[in-house]
Figure: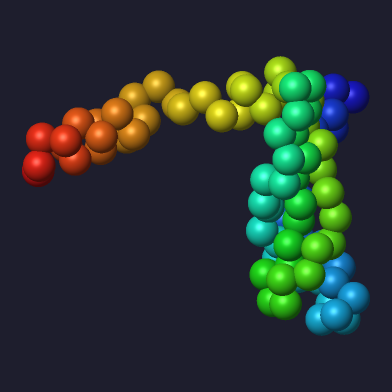
Length: 81
């Protein structure tokens, strides 16, 4: 069941809003072996939970996709176009 080792929540139950709400993920802390992310309610901003990502998983998720627009955007920015 390796498919369920890591996942991201899209909605969680918020006690303040008293219903399931969409969540935003915010990076709280970077440690040598893992990162800790906090899930925030999109309605009221309350913390609804945390997620820990091990170092190997975090680095692979931060790598840009091949041909991503960051380098092209940076080049355009510095060229003034």
